[in-house]
Each structure stands twice: as structure tokens, then as C-alpha cells.
Length: 518
Length: 83
Image 1 (cartoon, chains in turn red, orange):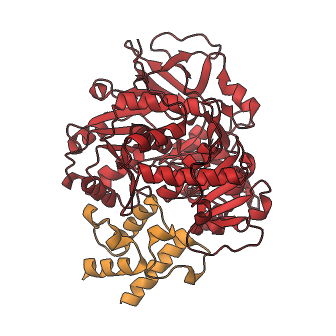
Image 2: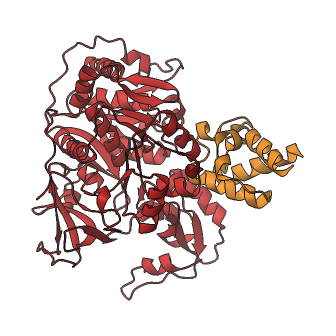
Image 3: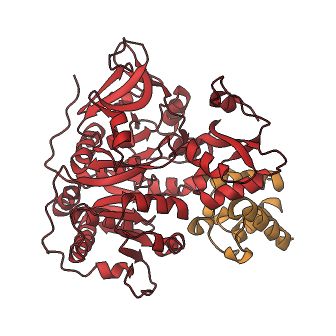
């Protein structure tokens, strides 16, 4: 019998903000870099920007992109776009001209909210984005063109925020989250207001979040997990202490103490960094109530270490997919020691089944693909019907993750059907990197695989066969990747081979390359 | 001595993180964090390099921006640790 989500009156995502601003106007919504914005303040900025968008004739369903590592800019634009009836496209700030262009073109984004420092990526491609009408920049610089494409954020403020905004339906798409596809081209996961609200309410229920909570938010909001941390805390009027670069974990630990945070959310590499590359054992967190980890099950060793440094804190292991807004299952804290390596059971409002390829259920302990049903399952991939039909089938969302369950119904991931690399909080398609490397004139053949890594989970290894007579050093290929890929997709290691191991049908044996020690 | 160290640091940063960038694209006081020069794994690479090159041990509590977040800060940190 599955737990039911707590009732909540919210129908759309902006309802979270408006409700919190009404009920808890003075609560700190975002704390970042010594500055605080309350729910009242964020709501006022977002409403003003939404009114400006309406005045500029952005109609229902327009795509509004955000490229910003400033949480105040990001969050205000996020709600403004949705209040005006638009669809948010959150962009990865670790980017390249090429990656940015791909997503802006695919989504036909009509407006982009960004910061001065990202202009360097845009200047060279702005002419190749015909759908893009305005770029709104947060910063001090002057307006610098004649056709009004480049605007200062101040222009979007100071508009009468009481102007009537268009009605938004729960079925409307609220957000596209781009995720690496196996084809190498990122796909936009379409999430409706109803999808996101359902998932948010469910997570709020099992984490028992209230307006008194204060989470340390280290995950970027453009990711599904970071987006979920944002929405779950806005849904209850709680606070987010934001530091998303995680370059210096000790700084984050200081902030956790200073702001008396009650919650902390991370991926496996977050916890590996904290446990192995910070002074965490010298800190005490008397206010910390819960920790969440998604992205992988937790090893008994890591669980034990976390219990040691966070005594008495509830540790929630969670599993999900962008295609499900974020969350599909969780392992309750009380089961962490009893069910090591498990991703738990379905979250409230979701049903998970393990099925054979033909749709029939597998027997207990047998391996099957996780298939999910629930209000949180995406509406499809943006303008990709074929890919949508491949995963959204009559049985539900086919996740591509293979798992088995035990006698009590706890799930254990066994493997994935795809060869995606999981490095830190990133999900990386080898194909995209292979295509870029293949463009180099010296390369005959390439295969990209993940290598196990204590901190990141996996790092990227490129296995290369050069064309006859060609010589090419590792640094030259890395430089080529740097020019064309965001930093997190650049291989950590390049290994040269005379030939790549293959099956009799000519398919590269990637598992063999993963095991190859050099 | 300090100038040599600064040269070594700049050479490491350019070789591993900035590649073909112009030499004047990074000032010695520029914050690596604010300029987006390195990410969290870059910091780990940097620490490994410091420990190997200067035969020093970087303690967990020393992994803070005051020690690591610019060429000049790194230079002072190395000087302090190796004196």
C-alpha cells in the first residue's frame, strides 16, 4: 500500500511562489553571497518581469531560457516566465558556444535571461538564433545595440505588476529540461505544471518539509535534482542557502553552520568530496535534520561514514529521472542499514513495476526494467515523437534502468541499458564526445567510456585509433575537445590503441575498454 | 623565488585549464572561482600538483579560497608552507 501525498491546493508552479509570498512574506527565500531575498521581494520582481513579458507580446507557450549562476536572477526569471504563460528552459552554465546554440535552436527560445559574463558565448551565435527576440542581461553595462535585442534587466522591472497575467493551466508545459540522449543530441524533457506539482508535493510529504526548514542548495537549479530542491522548498515557504559551485567544500560547511541549515542535498560525488576533501569531521551541525542523495544507491561504507559525521541526521537515498521531474523512489532513513545498496520503494503517488521487454512482470528477485506510472511522468520529449514513443508506452515510463526487488519489494539497480557516463552530477552521452573527437583530422576511430572514480563516480576516457601516418598527442585532442565541449564533457584521459576490440558483428566492446587499465 | 613560483603556477593553470588563452586573460589577482577557470575537480588536480611539485602536504582545512583561489594566493600559500 503506497503512502499518499499530503493534500496541497497548488495547481501550477507559480502558485508555490505566490502562496509563500502571501503566507510567509518575510521568510528568506534565497540567501546567497551575503544577500537575502524574501518571498515578498522575489514575488514582486517576478510579477514585474512577467508583466513586462506580457507587454512585449510573449504569448502562452513561448520558451524563455535562463543562463545564470546568480540564484536571484535565475529564480526571478524562472517564475516570471511561467507567470507570463511561458516555458522555462534552464541552461547549463558550464557551456560552449556550440552547446548553447544547440539548445537555444532546438527550443526556439524567444528570450534569454542571462548575466554579463556569459555574453562571450552569445556574441558569436546571436545572429544564428532567429527565434531569439531579446537577451536580458543582469549587470551594469549600457544597452549596446540598435535593434533592442540586448537589454538590461532594469528594463524588465518597474512595470505595473498588477497587470492581469494570462491564466495558466496545470496541463500547460512549465519547463523543458535538456538531458543527454543516447544519440548524443540533447533532448528537451517536457514537464507540465501538473507533473512538477505532483512530484513536489510527494517529496514535501516524505521529507516532511515545513516553512522552518533551511536547505543548503549546492546543486544547480538547471538540473532536475536542483530544480526539485528549489520547488520543494518554495512549496512550503522554506529557505535556500545557495552556493552552487562547490569548489571549496569548507566554505559550504561554514555556511551550513552560519545559517543553521536543516537540510542538505547532494549526489554521490558531493558526499565523496565532503568526506575526503574537506574538514567536515571538525564541524558540528546541531540543526541538520535530513540529507538527501540521488544519482546512485549508497554503499554501506559511505552510509556508515555519513552516520559518523552527521550523527542522528536522517539520510534519504533517492532515485529518479529527469523524465519523472526528478523523483521516483526513496529509501527511508530507518532502512539505510537494513537494506544496503537499495533505492527503496516508489514515492507517494508513483507506481513502479519491474517488467520484461514484452511488458510482462518479472518474478521476485529477477531482473527487469523499471517502469513508472504517476502524475509526475513527463509529457514527452520536445518535438521528438519517435523518442517519446520509445519510452512512454502503455505500461508507463520505461526508464532504461534494470533492477531487481527483494521479498519486501525494495528495489536494487543492477545496471543501465545505455552506456551513459555519470560524472559528478552530470549525465553524459559518450556519443556526443565521440562525434567531436571524430571531427579531428588525425582520428580514425574513437570510443568514449566511463572509468570508475572515487570522487566523481566516473571520469571520461577516450580510446582512440589514429589514421595511418598521423601523429597526435593527447594534449592536442584535449585542446580540440576544450574548444568544442563544455569543460565537464572533456575527457580526463586519452588512450591510443592500434585497434579497438570488437564483436564479430563489428560493434565496439566498450566493457572491455572500461576494464582496460591504462 | 616568488617570481619563479608565480611563473610555475601560471604555466600549470594555462597548460591544464586555459590552454590557448592569451597570457593577459588571467591576472595574478583574478579569482579562479569568479572567472570560472577551474571546477571542483580542477581544485583537486591543483592540490595534487601542489603536493607533488612543492613536496608539501595540503591539509583538509587548508582547502579554502584564501589559500588557493588566485595565482597570488597560491604563491603566498606555497611560500608559507615551504619556508
